[in-house]
Image (cartoon, rainbow, N blue to C red; front, side, top):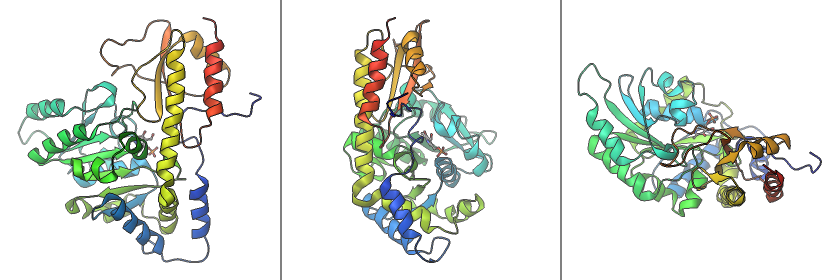
Length: 359
Ligand SMILES: Cc1ncc(COP(=O)(O)O)c(C=O)c1O
């Protein structure tokens, strides 16, 4: 590649940290500070989250999304309980059993759903069929991903329907918000509207994919779920002695609404890419592009041409495609992810390369 443009669309975690986050880290590096969450940065970021969510919150910064999810689910589900989630959700499919491990054995029950989305009616149907017997693990939580692993964004009404069901059955509702900001700007909702007002009890607030170096936070709206979390985080090895550096990242991330600007940019780059791909002869979108991930069904010749030009992206599972859409013999389903750092010229170069392929 002679243009110097990166065609790396493999994920939003291939980028480094944003300048605002790095500057916040450098500022936090000047001189000593109290350890283990007693520092000024942590106090400030706790207050900032309470203001942002318009709610009293308990905040537990950690370094990975897997830790956030595993700790959140361990707080919500006992070792003999179960949690309903999508069968291809990150918690079920990409965390090497961390939620089961951190919860000392809770079970994840994987549900179907187009585009990795849970539907309240399907959740209810599965709940109704779970045997009520001491031999079975009782359902204690539901976990949904916002945005989903297929880039779809739940509407507030969809979350609220699952939230109401959870309330009526005494279940906790967890949101895996690894791409929380991308979903939020798409919806145009407030953080409160997309979470506790719709029935979310506990949130994995993602920040690494959208500009942090390594910082996420478990945000707890239901005080009962926060009781054990300080101990669980320490036992899980995620209580940083130099805690200020996790908090400083989150502060730099939230400062001047940089996180929202980043997400708007990433989503706009995805829309640019998705629009261009959809116009290519022979290509089509698998799911609508609602956040910063684009899922396209491409003729294999285009797939080969863009890969040969150095583009990086991933093949994807066709299991939960919308009804009526299938991947043909000479086609492939792939995922491209854009980020706060994606350049429009890179998107255009990818599209031009794809368009130049004669197939
Ligand atoms: C939906 C979702 N949840 C959580 C995560 C967090 O994963 P990690 O532990 O790699 O930070 C990811 C990362 O790919 C994700 O896509």
